[in-house]
Structures are given as structure tokens and as C-alpha cells.
Length: 314
Image (cartoon, rainbow, N blue to C red; front, side, top):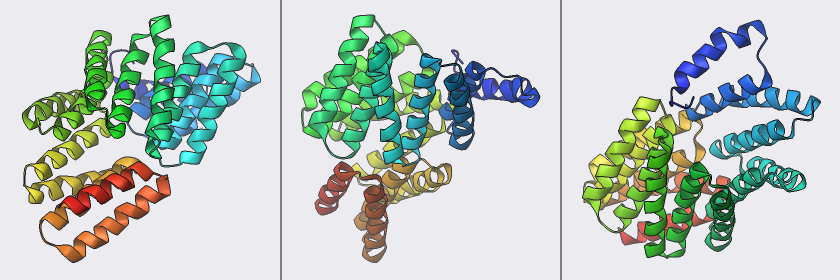
């Protein structure tokens, strides 16, 4: 797991412990985390729910917190935002009751992501700042990297671009210190999108390329598709809507199949914009409607507003 060999870890689990029914809940949760990193959410959810039941029987607070947080993350990725919010809120409450600072920080991070999805960038950034203070206090480098990445996205949405770049740069530096390929890819993809916004396309492509290689090596499907989405965005901004539409269609199809709800909606949005740029008006309007429906189902108010702005600019 620490080496990022998630496919190997998951295969080992199924070849040994699970087949005999002897797996501890801790092993089951590790397998669930590997499955989630691979984008296999059905498998991850089943393993996580089973592990949490066992943690609850023995009143293992840390196990309950870890498994509940993962169930929230899976729900978020699959577009079940109310379920995600319920899990994350429960984690926050239990963490506060038992004095688990790291879990309280993680729940703040995750609730911040939901606030950001809904277009509430100011409360989102406040939650990220709260999480960052805890991670800095306990010296949790992984937590710092993840939170700086999230904070950079929130600051970008609020228009504080200089602060967003500073936070994104810190996310990349800290992720590289941690050395986790998935974490580095996440931070690089966040910085790439900021560079696309500032029309620094060559720098963005460097980061996307590095992140894509890390994602392929790790078998991380969400990061591979995010890289594809950003390639499509660069193509659109550089005046190549044909290539943008080709890549956006790949993102839309693969993300929908894998139940990456937000990525699928973003793929639909980019496809609509590319079709409009190509002058295929009827198809573009239909694609925009599909993207609008997808964003509304997620409560993604901020994404809807961005789609409207970009639509008018083409």
C-alpha cells in the first residue's frame, strides 16, 4: 500500500484472507482503501461497510472513524452528496467527542469539499484553513498537502488567484516530500488547472504529463481521467475544439461507466463547450442540457455558474 501498489495489494487480499473468511477488519479496510484508490467503488463500499460493522461490535473508535470517512468519500465520488455529508458530519461529531484531532481535520476537509461543490467558496476555505491548522500542529505532511490542494481550489473559486497559486505550490512541494505518487499527481493536477486559467499552457502540460505517468504507474483511474479532462481543457483554450471534444468524450464515457459522478459531469460540460466552438449548435445545446442536469443532481452550483460563463464566452 505505502508503495502505491494498490492492484497488487487488493489481489493479495482476495487471494488470501477474504476467500477463507479470516480477514481482520483492519485488513478488510486496507483492501477497501486500495480498491477506492483504483476507482473500484462497489468493491470498496462492500469491504468498508463490513469492516465498520466489526469495528462497531468491539467499539473501535478509530476503526469506526476511518471506515465512516471512507464510506463518505465513496459516496462523494459516486455523486451521493447527501450520504457523503451524513458520513462526514458523523465523523466530525465522533472525532470531537473522542478528541481525535486528525479525524476532525479530515472531516473539515471533506465538508469543505462539499461546500465548494455547492459554490460556497468562503465557508469551504474556512473549513480548509481549520483542517490545515490541525495538520500543521501535529506535523501531518500528507494532511498538509491534501488540504493545501483543496484550499487552492477554494481560493481559485473565490478569485484569490495569487493565494491559490501559493497554496497549490505548497501542496506540490509537500506531496513530493511525502513521496506518495497519488498525492503528487493530485497536487500536480491542481496546479495544472491554475496554470491553464492563467494561460500558462506549457507549464500546465508539464504537470499534466507528470501526473498522468504517476497515475498510470499507480493504476489510479480517477487521476488518469482528470489528466484527460485537463488535456481537453488545454485543447479548447488553445483553439482546437475537435481535440477537446475527442478527449472530453472519453472522460464523459469512462467516468460515467466507473461512477465518477463529478468527473462525468465535467466531461459533459467540456464536450458541450467544444461542440459550440465547432459550430455544432444543436448538439451543443443538448450536451449543455445533459451537463446541467448532471451538475444539478450533485448540487454543484459553482460548476453550473462556471459552465454558464464559459458558454457565453465562446
